[in-house]
Image 1 (spheres, rainbow, N blue to C red):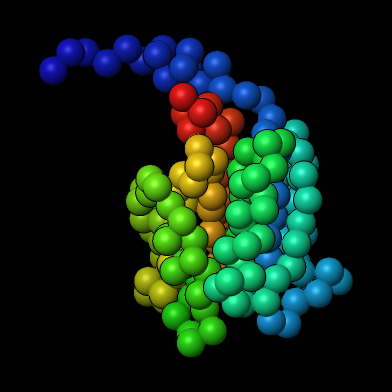
Image 2 (cartoon, rainbow, N blue to C red):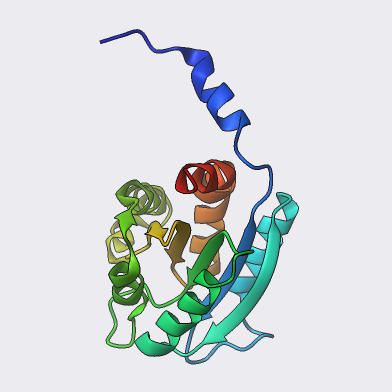
Length: 173
């Protein structure tokens, strides 16, 4: 195996966009604009990192509504990343995972694996019930996060914010 060039990662990421435009979809039967702490946390963390929030929506945990909302944003050429929060658990109403997975053309399995590993460090074996996932849909990054604000902050701070520009760069190649 050829030796790894330690500077190549830095040079590679230097070509990534410094900011990206994201749309946030909160999937919930009960959240309102006032009570959507997870969607607000995503927006605040993106803005603090220099990214742009192109918009937000709250939709009921209904597969057709979630799919149509995502598809509308995929049709928007300004949106580079779609982040959903909510509906990734295992209750009978949780359907975001199935909806988003059905749209994905390429999966980023490592995202879900890393998220559950980090989550396990905080909440223990209950982390296995998270079906957080990420992948590519029509050349865009789509990420589904749990509805918990703590889980959203964990995923954004430890995984997504550090790699968002790089993810968008790779998805557009």
